[in-house]
Image (cartoon, helix red, strand yellow):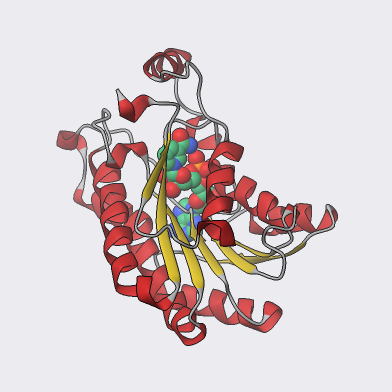
Length: 246
Ligand SMILES: NC(=O)c1ccc[n+]([C@@H]2O[C@H](COP(=O)([O-])OP(=O)(O)OC[C@H]3O[C@@H](n4cnc5c(N)ncnc54)[C@H](O)[C@@H]3O)[C@@H](O)[C@H]2O)c1
C-alpha cells in the first residue's frame, strides 16, 4: 500500500476495462487519481472516492489537443501537478485490410496513436521543469506478433511502442521514465462482442491457458509508475501469459 502516496496520476480510458482497474489500484496505493475518458469517468472517480481514495473525473477526448489542455489545467487546479501519465484510451478493430475504409484507419490513428502523442506533448514540459515524471503507454501484443484482422490497430500500437522507445531516449537524462505495456488478451468490455469460439481460440493460443485479468496489467503499470522502476525506460513490457514468446 501507499506506493504512490503524494503522487498525482492522470489516467486516460479510465471509464472502463483496464483503465478503470488501473485507476482503482492507483487510488488504493495513495495517488490522487484523475479519471479521464469520453464516458464513465465520473463513475470511476466516485467509486474511488467512495472507497476512501482521492479522485476526480475529467472529460477528455484524447484525439483533440485542446481537450488535453483543458484536462491538464483542471488537474493542476485540483491537485497542483501531474506526476504520472497513463495512456490507456483505445479503440478496437476487426477487419480485413481490404474492407478497411480510410476514415476508419484515420480514426484508429487519431485515438490510439495521436492520443498518446498529445498526452506526452502535454505533460513533458512540466516533467522537464521538475526533473521527474513517469509515462506509461498501453500498447498491445498486436505490436509484437501477427494477430488476425487488426491492420490499423496493429499499426497504431506498433507506433506506440516505437514512439515510446524513441521519446524515452530524449528524456532519460532528465529523470523521466517512459515505458509501454503490451497486454495479451485481457477480459474487459472490449471483448464483449466476440464469440465463445473466438474466446476459446485466444485461450488455446495462450500458453498460460487462460485470458488475462485487468488487474494483471494494472500491477505492471503500478510498478512502472512507482519509484521501484526508476532505472527502467524505453521498454515495452509484454504481459500476455506467454503468447508472444512462442
Ligand atoms: N482487452 C484487451 O484484450 C487488450 C489487449 C491489448 C491492448 N488493449 C488496450 O488496452 C486499452 C484499454 O482497453 P480495454 O480492453 O480496457 O477496453 P475498453 O473498451 O473497456 O476501454 C477503453 C476506454 O477508452 C475510452 N476511449 C475510447 N476513445 C476515446 C477517446 N477518443 N478519448 C478518451 N477515451 C477514449 C473508452 O471510452 C473506454 O472507456 C486500449 O488501448 C486497448 O487497445 C486491450
